[in-house]
Length: 442
Image (cartoon, rainbow, N blue to C red; front, side, top):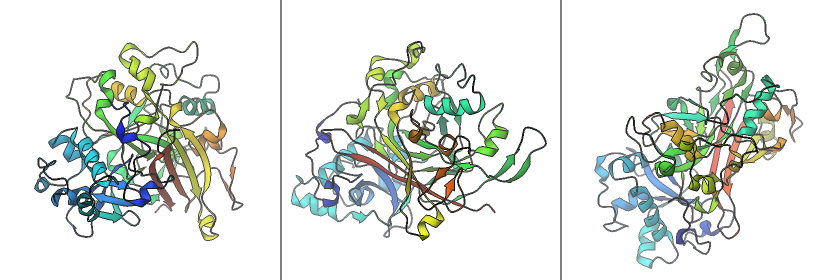
């Protein structure tokens, strides 16, 4: 199970890649997240890799050169792009885990010199690498699983009844747009849409004035299910491969006009940014925690959404941070300013419950599908995961070190999201960054 702690989590493990031994590195040998990058030696297809310190270890090249011997002879490099979706579908869902362990063996400082030398031939600098979206994303579903976020937003619009009656019974979600998912670093063009400035009169069409970000955790499906075959809560995490950072960009003025009666639509699907590294569930094992402790009087999850393992270990202890750097801050060499820091421990529903509920009606999830938690917020003001909450719908602007204020995002603003796990007795591991800069509408 993905909850198990084993020798791969030993904090004393070191790599001969020296940068991986830096205690502040996101990518020590205990992590090795998967990614895809374009190699200078191959213009035909991106290469599968793992991140190690400040390097990428090219798995496509290493397999082709026989670095792993006969361990992966079932992987035919002539079949097409060697990405996580292909391997999980055509080699088997456990092949990726086996490949990560093989990479760990080759990158360990205990590897024999021959293996180290062979692996070193396939290391490339991570800085400046042309990265690609790691999975082939066929579908994207976004949830609404932070009770603090849901309560804050509900309080703005329904102060007497902030949570809908279903919120504490089901992981609420909506289907997003997979085709507009973009990789970290992609500029985000301010979208157009319909909005209405007051409660009376017709709407107007034009660029969104209330553009926002949402700090979320995403997770990839690594094993699908057949149509009409639900996934039990006890098996849910067998279907989850790993996690990434997600910025669910939101046009709040457009959203406020369009969301009733069917929920988010054009206010969300113009762009969603994700980080390029997929941290595996195995790497996250030391950072598992109990599911959210519900208040006395709250209903307990229905039977299909609950088991002992999920109650004890279904949560994740991942710190999430959001920074902003405006055009003026860049020109004056002012470092990005931290807007908030939240933690996935505060999610009302676990990722296992989200996946189980998604498939409970027989919906067939597929390898590479991306699911996201919704905005991750905590109890305190500085733990709110979007500007809508931080500025309370624009009424309480944020003061920046440049002398500027922000209610919502302006052109030139860059949002930088970071994620990392820390626990005494284990190496710190990170999720990397998810960046996006707002550029003017057409």
